[in-house]
Length: 257
Image 1 (cartoon, rainbow, N blue to C red):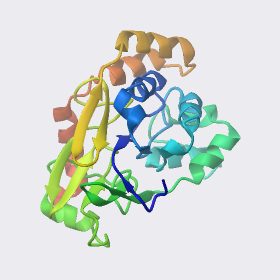
Image 2 (spheres, one colour):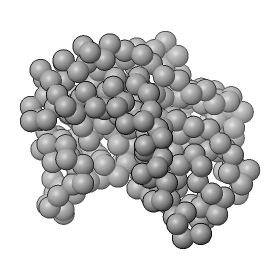
Image 3 (tube, rainbow, N blue to C red):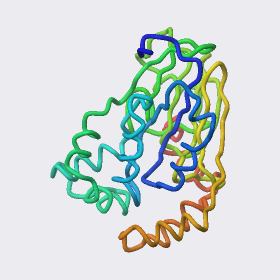
């Protein structure tokens, strides 16, 4: 099937962030295995097991359709000497853990792609917003903000799928459906590996997995100095959705209104 054809069912995975146990759990889901394609909406590698996550996904062959996120871009820039630091503390470790061929692969990833999905028509996939890989929109962003981020979007795009904020939601904005599948590896609000099925509707999913075992595995297999605390905080979703929305809400420009 070419990308010009219509897909019946897509599994959308976002923000894996190098957490191999969470990714393995989602890929084992029967409905992911049965989907026409797996679409990744960025921030695939910035975490404890970036090389292993990338290898596992590339083993899926052309079943995977890739989009890069801001964190993937930052790892590439760091490795290529284009930036001296990364805001995420685990970022430099993740960047150094990538092989040269993986750095090149990440550098070549597109920022958006549009696919036809049965029941939804043309769907635009991106990481943060259609125009930028790191600007913020959240579930309660005001209508004027959505007008800004939709600027230049073709009128035929009726659905936009984005990640970046690690919290799942589905909402309407100016007649367009906006879908965020949440995060596979670093969820906010509640634990589990979050993803979604797309076509003919939208179905937000969460895959439970053995988090204590995953924390122990990451602590054992990852050389990042603070891995035990990192894994405990992110895999158990210690950050609540309320805390994150309070912290990030002003960053969507609402203070300017």
